[in-house]
Image 1: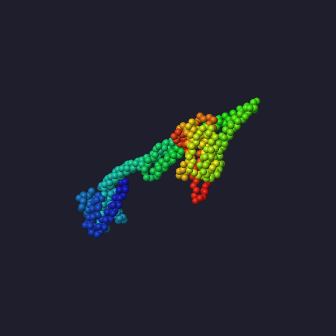
Image 2: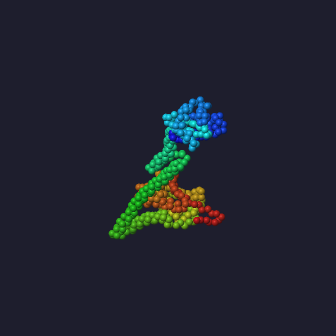
Image 3: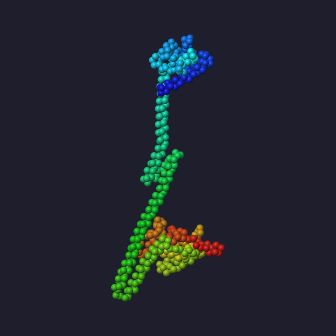
Length: 455
């Protein structure tokens, strides 16, 4: 740092000497006021030596009240000793640095004209003090800048790291299937965009996992009902098979011809039971696999309902059941006639099977929003709402204690649901005073301009 200041000081002395030379050449000694003020401000002493008259002109205190740091005679003696005048014969200026001789200073020599010489001196101690002061100033500034830089870096790093840590914490919880925490980041940059993406990912994962859980629960419930169904069907197959086997052996070993007819009746009844179960299973399989086709047409739902009720007349009379029907208004629907016959038959037989001691069944039709609804009520003790919501599900049977005598395996209503969904309709059940209402809906067929339209 000191050498840098010494170099700059030498350049200042050269520039000052040029200013003095120009002023001296124009106005002589009287024109040196301004350049001498600059020299005084730079702590520089100025002497002019006239070699012909051998006298000195001290210019350093004309405007500054500063005495020269050395005597002029000592300066002249030192200059002669250093052969300054001879050196200036071939040079524009000469620098000398004297340590411990006259003063610890930098000396500058040059010529104003052929016989007039300019001597300039500035103390090195001033340069060292200035350099040390500058070093201290720069040291303090550097330390301050370093501290400020560290603080700024800390706060900037905290601003960046804090949201990243929060995002990492949220991601760790997501990896542990904990979606309760959200990234609350508002930096307005890519980090905020990343936090929003993590939040969206968390919401999507939670939603998909919830759906997956529901699907797994539903699958588990279906598998449970399937196992129960297989167990029940296996048991119900076993019963008629055992009876068929036993009565076949009895028929083979029978020695009383009058009992043969009774045994044959039992064998036929058990065979019909097995055939009915197998047919229901085959029908449901065909419906669910899409192997069964639908022949769409339009027909009177009133006529269909009346026909099914009439076909079950003997069964109704046998059980002493009273059927009330309200089918006065003619309603046309679209669908596969044979499949809808199967739908209503399954629901009607289900009502006959589970009607209570009041033995009441009612049927009526309603129309709403382009759909025709067939409603069937049977008196029955209240059914739990959970069972009522699932009664159309495959393999479902509300009464888990029913035996084979009930002749129901949760297949009939599942067939109803499959057929109605294929017709883009709906079905369901709800409680009504003293019993349960089962219903299904089909699209109403409307004649337009005397033209019959159907799909």
